[in-house]
Image (cartoon, rainbow over all chains, first blue to last red; front, side, top):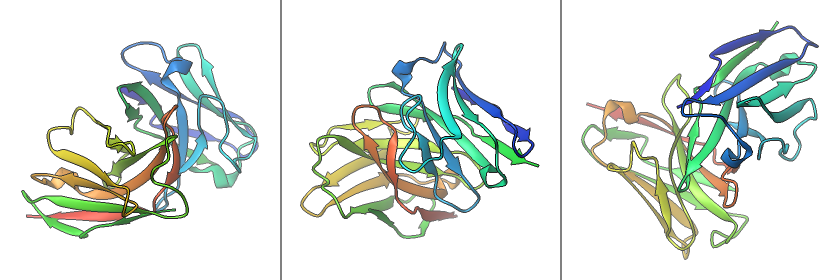
Amino acid sequence: VVTQEPSFSVSPGETVTLTCGLSSGPVSRDHYPSWYQQTPGQVPRTLIEITDSRSSGVPDRFSGSILGNKAALTITGALADDEATYYCCLYLRFGVSVFGGGTKLTVL
Amino acid sequence: QLQESGPGLVESSQTLSLICSVSGGSISTRTHYWGWIRQPPGKGLEFIATIFQSGTAYYNPSLKSRVAISIDTSKKQFSLKVFSVVAADAGVYYCARQSGSYWFVADWGQGTLVSVSS
């Protein structure tokens, strides 16, 4: 099971780090962590492709990393437009990927 | 570009059939897979299955017994069938282009909403 914080709140301009864990053990680069942003009624948008590689057109205030035993998405200087649900996805094996439950980020 | 098409409404216990049409690029690419991801109303994303141009396919183990993915490169389409549909199969179904090396979703379709009637 891929675990994420259900919700998080951040003030505009602050930095927030969302995490993505794996119930069976530590997350590593071999899980090719990816991150997606989704606002209500919209198609998910790919933010981070492989651990820390930003997708084309994604602002550099979004960054991905491995922090300890988890994958992490850091938003530096959060904007009101960043209010969304963020999903991480981990590759497990044999072509199978698993999404986390998502973190609903509130910017206020 | 990816575009899903489907019935919109399917009866419980019947088979749901969805098609994804690929345009603006080659479905026969050797660098990407073609996948299906769904999202029940108000819930998160769930990987269903993915397929390579050769027909090699991988499935979510929890759904493997009830779904089938296929590809028709001549039509530039890939498809998903969900058998014995239940209420929990309702939601938005997205088709996607996935990196063949690192499995992230490179492109998303607009999604198609599927409702299940009893």
